[in-house]
Structures are given as C-alpha cells and as structure tokens.
Length: 242
Image (cartoon, rainbow, N blue to C red; front, top):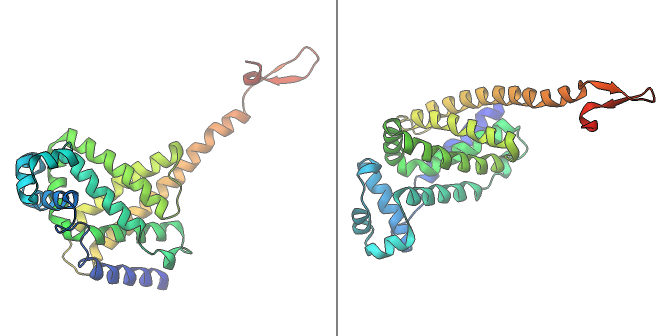
C-alpha cells in the first residue's frame, strides 16, 4: 500500500511538471509547426473537417512545404504519437525499475497521460470521431498498438512475437478506455484516471495469465501426440516420421 501511494504521489508530481512541457513547439522546425497547428485545429474541430490549406495557414508554412513533410493528416497524427513515444521513452524510470511489471507499466502510462495533457481536447476530438468513423478507428488502433509496443518495452515487458502483439493490442484497448475517463478528469491529481488505469491493468494482468495458459496448451498437446510402433518393437513420434 505504501509503495502504491508513493507511486501515485510521483505521478501527481510529474503531472504538475508536464503541463509546462508541451511535446511540440510552434517556434521549432516547419515539421514541429505543422504538428502544433494540426493539434490546435483538432482541438476545435473533427479531423475529417481539417484541410491541408487550413493546416498550412495555421502553421505559417507554404502548402508545398506541408506536402513535403506529410502526405496526410493521419501522417501528421502519427508523427505526434511518435514524439510522445520518444518523450516517454526518454523519461527517467530508475525510480520504478525494481517494481513489479504492473507497477512499472502503470508509471509509464501515467507519464504518457502527463505528456498528452496539453492536447486533451485534441484527444477527445479524435475519440469522438473514431466512434462515428470505423476506417479512422482502425487506423488509430494500428497506431495505438505500435505505440503500446514501445510502452511495454519501456516497462521492461516483452512485446515481441505473437504473444507480444496480443499484449500490445490488449493494452491499446485498455488504454483507450482509460483515455475516456482521463478527458473528463478535472482533478489535478488525476485520481479518477489513476483508479481507472489501475483497474484496467488488473484486468489486463488476468488476461495475460489466461494468455500464458493458452500458449502452454500446444506444448502439452505435443507431448500427447500419438506414437506408432516401429518394426524393431520400439515407438516413434508420428510428427517426426512425417
């Protein structure tokens, strides 16, 4: 209990600091200006309503330069998500590296929410659009799964192979549910969000245990494969004989 209280205290402290550190800056490169302008527009309207000319004007860059940097609005969004990934991966996690995997993942995902805080309205807009636009929802899911693979890696949890892909997909779905709580959480300490994340990771931990059990089944079946008698009186594995 004391460990969890310390973890939540650390999350609140980081939250207060992160509001002063937006991921993108309008004073940076053209690429950064485009991302920042896109996020500001996304906070005010649905992604389907945002045009290239509008983004270029808001960013203060020529339209050809926008085309040179990005091929679509989803490409701009993907670049922003990648920058958030890098910010999380670059954070100092030494204070939780001795914690259990669930605790480490909690800290990693809370840091992600802290970094996203300046763009909460843009995230809310995306979630609203995804509910009405299945192709957009599929595209966002693909980005989320790729991003959560990096979050698993940051927490020291394997995200490789089929099992890792399932973990990332499950985590993307869980985190999407937490985002719906986060966008309406006005508490500076994000108490509701932390409680929702804690519950979600608890469900995910149970799912991971089930997944491990399912992955052991093929190995058990292999040990139960029928054998056939050889002419010399011994037995041989039917799979090996095939």
